[in-house]
Image (tube, rainbow, N blue to C red; front, side, top):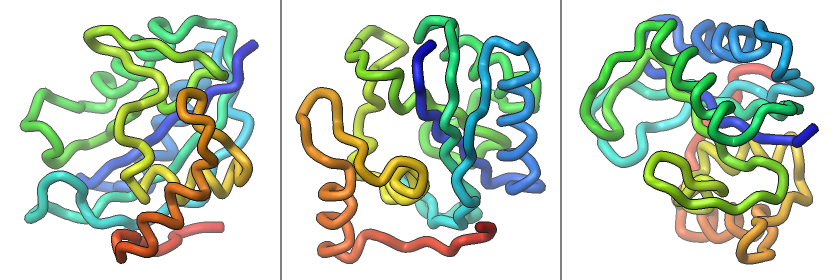
Amino acid sequence: MARCYLGLGSNLGDRAGAVLRAAALLAAGGDIVVERMSSLYVTRPWGRRGQPDFVNAVAQVETDIGPRALLARAKQVEAGMGRTGRERWGPREIDIDVLLYGQEVMKSGDLCIPHPGMEERAFVLVPLLELAPDLVHPVTGRRFAESLRDLESRGEVSWEKLTT
């Protein structure tokens, strides 16, 4: 079994409900166990402004399916929840990203683990560190908490906790 971390986010409709429903749908097949969910956070859009705020969370999961199968399941859940192809970093019903898959490192056309750019995104780091405060980047060996401190020092962290 591999311990993985998935980023979940939504900025259309019932955003919080969509994030929680996506986690439940991921676990519905029985081969992905959602061990813990972070709190839900309201965050400003990243990459493209001028759209509704997001609700983001991170799920800590255990699974025996491989990274590609995990990505395929995430895309299946997104499609089942009505996500349609839209512009990059635009509004979405649900977004599920494979952030970390154990200590694996891989890079291919549609799947990069660890997720590229996660160290620059407070909406990923804040909920991730809530679940695993001592987590280390498998490539750089740097603690994710240090990355968050860097973002905070540049004033790039803005979030509101929705739940505990």
